[in-house]
Amino acid sequence: MSNVMRDSQIMAQILDEDLGYMSDMALELAQMAEDTGLTTLAYLFRMAALEASTANSVLAEPDELPRQMTSH
Image 1 (cartoon, rainbow, N blue to C red):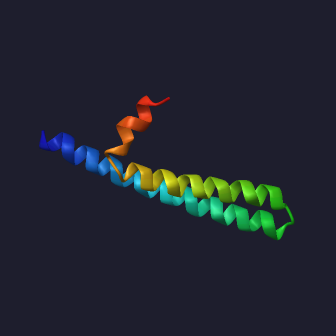
Image 2 (cartoon, rainbow, N blue to C red):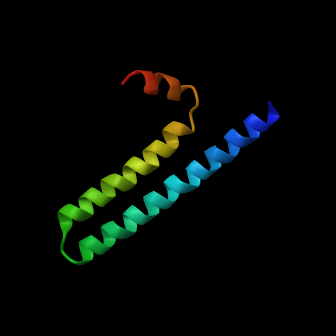
């Protein structure tokens, strides 16, 4: 059972790193889009960054996950 818990902790850490990376990349793309005058695209990238950071905080709360998965 300890292997399963260790594996789930590793997967959670990887997911956390991936979401952080996606958020950072979306913010960089938003800045590039804004620098070239593409404000709508910049807005969409900022929303993607917000979504990634929000998903990160939601997944950090294990009690919330089962309820969210079954509500759809």
